[in-house]
Length: 322
Image 1 (cartoon, rainbow, N blue to C red):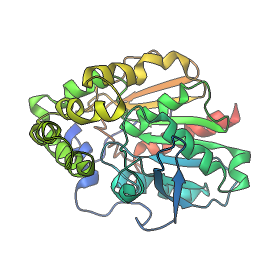
Image 2: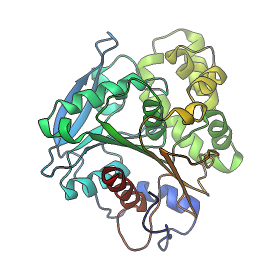
Image 3: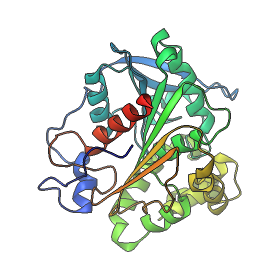
């Protein structure tokens, strides 16, 4: 069930960093319009009253619906989400561009914020998507998650009570080991990336900490590394003692042997943010570590779509044919 073709970098995106930043640079890229699709809201089952915002593109073919899950500080309008949506909509599949709890498009719908222990949020989203159309219940859903969204999808696939209509999971550039990822992001060569991510995180989570205790405000505002931010805010929001406890408890690597549905992990050997997964491939897990590709990059030869789009489609078809 490996991809039908190897990844080959496209000029001029010939380094890991160029692959990584391509989606944030000016220039025309494939993708559905950011404001396309039907706005939907998904209630959550934890009693908080929080809801998730999403955009729904109805399908026209007998295919599984595709739920696209963005990563850290991402949303329904992230360019890789728009690109993947374009490809799947073009195939006739129903597509849902999901926003995680408290991300900007749904900030007014939630008091809480997403983190790696919000697995039930994704399960609730799958159930809600299954109710959008009778065809989705018949053909099921596939989850395609990017970075943190991919790691969250893998955690759902490890749950024994997962929805039986989730047919497969694809995780692109997902942090399977949160501790190792925090350490890699904090390397001096990633200083620009980390500052960029931290700035976005602090703005995105401001409603959680700006009116809180002075000690929390100070810790968040002075955090210079992701692990310091997670220590000050994310771990507490998730109910853990500190960042180390949060990372140890929520890393998908801990339970990769308990996957209950087919899962494809796509990674680049030069990802500057997330170390390649050190996990053995065994059914129902398929692992592809491509040569080059950066972090959620994979801008390759032969197509203007990222390479992982075709790799994911090939994997899903293979699962359906089994």
